Amino acid sequence: MNRKLRVALIGHGAIGRVIARELLAQGGSEVELIAVLCHRAEEGGGLPVPVYTELPPLLALQPDLIVEAAGHEAVRAYGADCLAAGADLLLVSVGVLSDPDVLDALERAARAAGRQVLLPSGALAGLDYLQAARLAGLQSVCYRSRKPPQAWRDTPAEKLLDLGSVREATVFFRGTARQAARDYPKNANVAATLALCTLGLDDTQVELIADPQASGNVHEIEAQSVVGRLSVQVQNLPSPDNPKTSLVTPYSALRTIMSRRAAVSV
Ligand SMILES: NC(=O)C1=CN([C@@H]2O[C@H](COP(=O)(O)OP(=O)(O)OC[C@H]3O[C@@H](n4cnc5c(N)ncnc54)[C@H](O)[C@@H]3O)[C@@H](O)[C@H]2O)C=CC1
Ligand SMILES: O=C([O-])CC(=O)C(=O)O
Image (tube, rainbow, N blue to C red; front, side):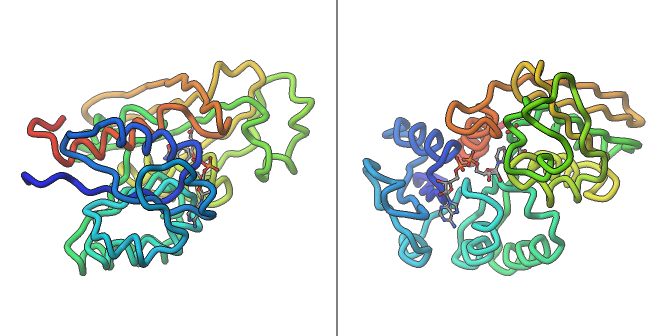
């Protein structure tokens, strides 16, 4: 583990730009950004590392870790190939794992290559406690996401309520983490992350709320286990570039990246 961790990035939007900027600022440390894959080359304008629009040249650089920050379709298109090429794969678009075929394909590819799929806590908090509690006995997990109405634009919420005239907190979705992650691919990735490390995608309950009074993107978890009860709320500031995305998300990915080379890892 003396060598620098060579990191490649897929996606250079609200999350990817922060990850790239912070990794580049690490100059001389144990982690280095070696390339970025963008939809269009212009999206990577100004980056001091190679920018590609296709996966093979990026894989040819033999990254140790590929960080996906591009959306569900990018995971479907590239995920298994990244693992097969010998890289670990960090996903922020975790909700795509609500599709059992995708989860199965990535698990198989990871096992075959001896690599790992890494899921950061993203916009959520409390997953460390819940993973410990699961080992002891976890009885129920509920997750609630409360965002301002504009954060639900271009989602099925638009058909369920008039986002422009919502005056009070309105629950427009109640269901499983699997349904939420599938139907709200840009808003409910954390529902899948929470479910995958607790009771599973079909037994983790989710509520989605449009709230004009929301103080940002608010995430709440309530869980009961044999070792105690967890009740946690985070009030995230939204990304200035994407109101659906919480500002903490790229930093959560960075934390996971850095921990791959930390001598003392929490
Ligand atoms: N786990 C978590 O806590 C969270 C996860 N997310 C996930 O992260 C994804 C990215 O979020 P943002 O950066 O806010 O979105 P964004 O829309 O600002 O950026 C996404 C970027 O990826 C690029 N892209 C899309 N498909 C691509 C492909 N096949 N190859 C290369 N680039 C591609 C787009 O052109 C865009 O520049 C979301 O779609 C969502 O699935 C978002 C927020 C929180
Ligand atoms: O960033 C957030 O607040 C959560 C989010 O969009 C997601 O899980 O997809």
